[in-house]
Image 1 (cartoon, rainbow, N blue to C red):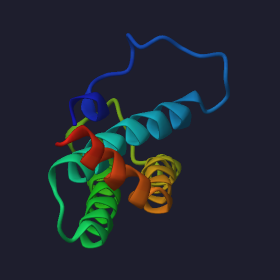
Image 2: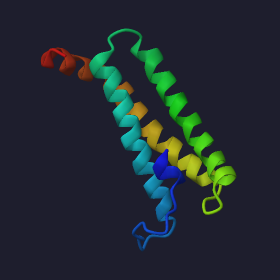
Image 3: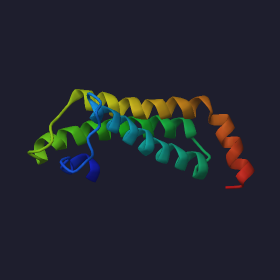
Image 4: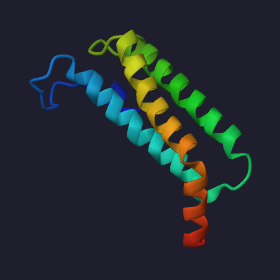
Length: 113
C-alpha cells in the first residue's frame, strides 16, 4: 500500500516508455506470489476457492489503490492502465499456480509443511 501511495520523485527512472506499468506488473506478481504461496504451504482445504478469492481480492485491491491515489494524493493519479498491469500480474501468478497446483501440493507434502 505504501509503495502505491508514496511520491515517485525519488524512484529511479527507466528509459522505457510506460515503465511504471512494468513496475505495477512486477509488484503484483510478487504480491500474488506471496499470497498464493502462503495458501499452498499452509492451507490444505478449499484451495480452488482460496485461489479465486485471493485473485479477486488482489484485483479489487489494485482498483482501490488507484482510486486512493487520485483522492488522497495530489502527486499520483488514477490510471486504468495501472489497473490492467496490476491485474495482469495477479492473473499471471494465478494461472501458473492453477496449472501447477498438484505439483505444488506434492512439493508441500515432500517438505512436510
